[in-house]
Image (cartoon, rainbow, N blue to C red):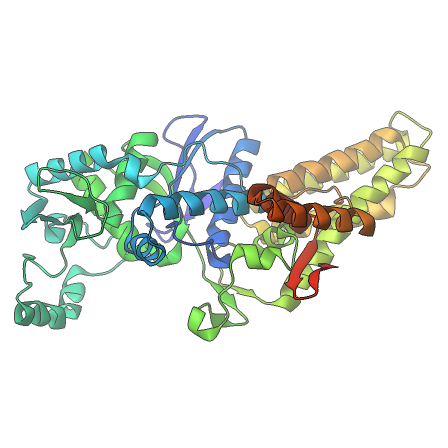
Amino acid sequence: MKIFNTMTKKKDEFIPINEGKVGIYVCGPTVYDYIHIGNARPMIVFDTLRRYLQYKGYEVNYVSNFTDVDDKIIKRANEEGVESIVISERYIEECKKDMAALNVMEATTHPKATEEIPDMISMVETLIEKGHAYEVNGTVYFRTRSFADYGKLSKKNIDDLEAGHRDEKHKLKVSGEDEKEDPLDFVLWKPKKEGEPSWQSPWGEGRPGWHLECSVMSKKYIGDVIDIHAGGEDLIFPHHENEIAQSEAANGTEFARYWMHNGFLKINNEKMSKSLGNFFTVREIGEKYDLEIIRFFMLSAHYRTPLNFSQELVEVSKTGLERIKNTVSRMKEILETATVDSLLDSEKDYVTKVNDFVAKFENAMDDDLNTADAISVVFELCKFANSTATSESSKELINLLIEKLDMLCGVLGISTKKKEVLLDEEIDNLIKERQEARKAKNFARADEIRDLLTQKGIILEDTREGVRWKRA
């Protein structure tokens, strides 16, 4: 298998550190709100990477964190008049619901930043001892120029970065905030501010810098060296660059062997932003489409290419996914009427062709996780199945076609089964039960029913006249 390594800027042969085992670290979301559709892309892409590595026989240790202490979380908590942990725990649970709806497997470990503070303090102490960090008035900074390879991932030249910070250097001096030895130095530990959560440290009460969190959590749950570090391309600089600097300076070894980054997601060819009114959460999209369609849509393009999210393109994916499900459904119908059990002599060539499709799928996935080409192979296999299988075919051949379609779609995290369609009466009864649950203040049950209806493609709309519903 070859992976495009952001560090080397080329496709490198994937060779794990330990034979048969792979450690993957994926930067997770900051939990202050529902995850948006842009968050979903790396979750789906690298979940598919994990599934494919498991398909190839690797034991995968998949670690993806939750940043549960951050300025945005604190701001939301202050707005609601609650503690930060109330906000972070609420949205961790909501994030897990959305991930499950996208068929993203639970991580081997989902560490939370706030539960790893002692190890973060320990790494900062190590960096100070080694001369890579320094403390000023309760803030600890990383000495960026002390790390000779700074910029090796993003290919940024440190002197060019210095030139870009000249205005900042002047601004800091004018304001009297020129604590840093160098404008390029970044924060490892920040002192407590009024109304913020904090932890005791050798430098006073405070909290960790964002970059530090991932360095510490990946080290604890995978080791000093990670096989694959992944995330969105917006994290390359400064987040991943800073992770490399502090990890390699502290641990004295390479931080990650392979770096994978997914491309940006645009909405109707525009950058997603709240000001443009094109900012969508996964939850909102889930009210319009079954999220399995969104997963299929995300995998229909190569993960490194920019992806444009539009209703027209999602509808194309919806049609494509239905085509796969209809093929498997038709195979199962044929199976019920088939009378011959064992493979016919005339079908032996068909078995070879089916296995050729599987090999072609694997070749696509081995080529830097090319899910777009892999999905094309699934369509080819569907076409072959539809043109080959008849009521005269053997059960062995039909079962083989079903099995291989199931297997390949399973690697992509897609089910070949058609979802049960709720009858109108069943929907009305569930809505009535939800209304009764809300009156009884049993909001957990009310949310459960709404989630169930959403999963079944039923969109609810609360109006003055009562609850209306429609099928997605």
